[in-house]
Length: 142
Image 1 (tube, rainbow, N blue to C red):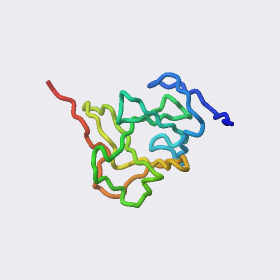
Image 2: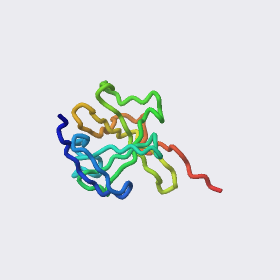
Image 3: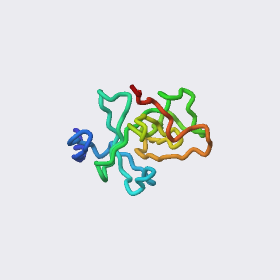
Image 4: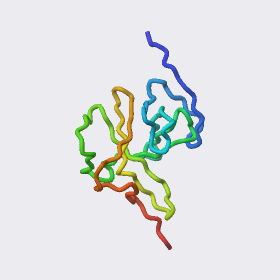
């Protein structure tokens, strides 16, 4: 017999009303940089924006971040500690348009999602190898 899954309806700016199963919510004990008060997030995959995903706050659904696997940008990406990639997934937050019209990634502060425990954390890497604004695309000036 199927047990009923608890579902939440989120009203988001990006995707309208979303139905989210409670067991698909990631808990970030320390929040995300600049948004420390928001602890619960859901990952959204949209076919038309792949390989990007979206991290949407359950606590405040108007807050959402485009995210991407850092390995799309750097196949040698290394956070300097061993993590079990069978149980953990890495993402970086994307800035869709900075003041110069560039799309960039924050490789300095990756997100780690533990897919078994449904927890997440944002690290600040202690070394200078990675930038907070790694340019993915530059706006062309015509």
